Image (spheres, rainbow, N blue to C red):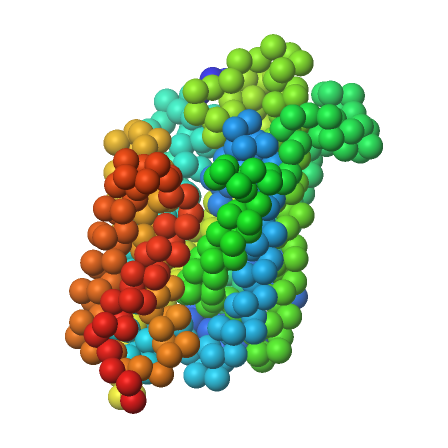
Length: 486
């Protein structure tokens, strides 16, 4: 990745100041520091604050560098999936949230225990832990790598120091207040992310001598400005992307403890539903802003005769590091990618701690010593941070984009059984043989992987995100076979 040594100190300073701001901000948030605050924030979070903060939590540093990069190969058709996101949020608000609030859940996988049994509960929690730990670590790895290449490596410092500094910062501002702090810090980080992205769009537009209306005209004239695809044979076909967007949102938000934990801190179901609908509305223009940035960046590169990197998700970091956009652009880019990464990683770390404590260790069961529960939660939180460091180091040693792509594709396999479990519980009244559930949940992704491999050979069909639906359908079918009517 190209370096610009004169600006690395600006990156380093922006990163340090931002982390100090977060630590100071959490000090100003009064928290009891008990498990009620850490897991549920006392169920008193303002819904507007939660909705705004969830935007930053759902957008990782990978999104900031990858979504603009995708424009080169798929134009702005990603917006079709974003429309599906909005429909998915409506389903979450009016189907899943009423269930979670009625059962007064701390971990949403507690529903599986009540509906099917303890083994189903552990199966759901385990699939979440696997997916979230690897996925969140992979996303944070990309951000750590970008920041390290731009700022830390030119100083002669090792990659491990970059990872340790970022994880230590996250651990420090989440270890006491947990979700209570994160609801507030995520709002701050979302503001920083949006401000930085607007600043990047403005700076690239200035380099191209474009006014706001000029930006709109440039996008309209560009072949990369295509937003809708009506070719039924394309993987970018509107209906295919829209439906995939709905189910991706349901599983990666509605069936994800990370995202739902924030919703469950609201004072009431009605406020949680308003939060979810507002959040779904906000996420649409935010992703549109990333796509606009991508079109402008490629237009700028073509105008200046700048060659493209082999991996398109390195395009924005390359332009920033090379100085092609000017030195000052380094500051908003650093703030933006750091805000996106920390907002995504801190909530993931807290939700993993919550799921391990509540689902696996059952610290909230009747008769469990509160002091012991508090100690366990602190130890688990530290162990989760160390696990993040381990996986990030593993990705760095491997040093291949293929590994990260595999991790993201794995998310479709790990969330599929969760979707199948919840759908079977919600839409049937059948009783499942609880001890069979772990085997069904493991076997379904294996069969799904085999079909994914054979489909291009046997039927000339290439699966996309609909692998999630296939996986969920196989799980649903397996549960039906090992169940009986009431």
